[in-house]
Image 1 (cartoon, rainbow, N blue to C red):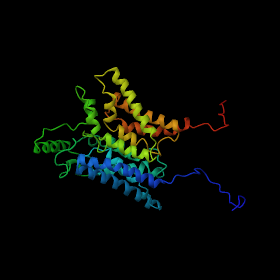
Image 2: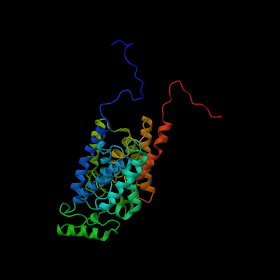
Image 3: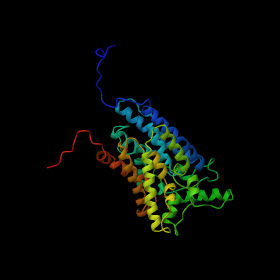
Image 4: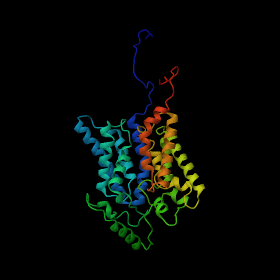
Length: 358
């Protein structure tokens, strides 16, 4: 066919497309989350398994029902809502009542995703919105932690797991369950407090060893403890080109430098920067939540600023705020300023100059 006979096609960008579509990317993110989910089940037992299944099922059903009501084809086959459910479950304490996990999934998908128009239109990470809602509405349940590798975790569930909807959670029953499990195994009981909580509210400050923090054998949210595994799973997505490595790099580097500055100013009152990196949900948040393609900036400079902003805010909340953890709120704040970062870091179009205001 001659050049004159070829039809002229006019379309919007992108003009060069990768072979992977949204479904492929979301499926690979789901695969990357599976080892973390399996490790959490091994660490916390049946309660963690039920929590992950409940949160994921609630998210999937909510999105499907909204599609049915709107009279459009279901979007659950693109795997994005499965990721939302898994991340929500992995950011909750393993003893979270199942009805709360379901409520958080419904709220996150309905409010932060569906009402904004679905995948590609949400301003905030839906899983974090659901988690933030639960923390504000049920602070006791969201701050009740379990020790890792509890004896009998594969044959019994944590009492709070099966709490009736809107019934008061019996925290004393949870602590009695922990004490009984250790007594039957002939082991001295250990505290269920997270390393960050022990540091924030302990007297004197208690700092876990770096090796123990990195191993994941600590109390914490269901999927945030094993930094080594989270890093490996994140590296898989970076290798596949499905995650912008600059976001977690900027976030972790910023957190390391700022916490290091505090530590150098007072090495007794403040933990070292390695403790700050591997305690809490900083690594998991950097690799699997802050890197959300929709809610993060698109420019190369913007993603560095975005990551650095989230890392710095996390450390400020941890050290100067009332909460021991700050990753969730820092990422949501980062989502909020992402459009502004995009705006100020856009490259100037060649040949175009900014018009000065009169």
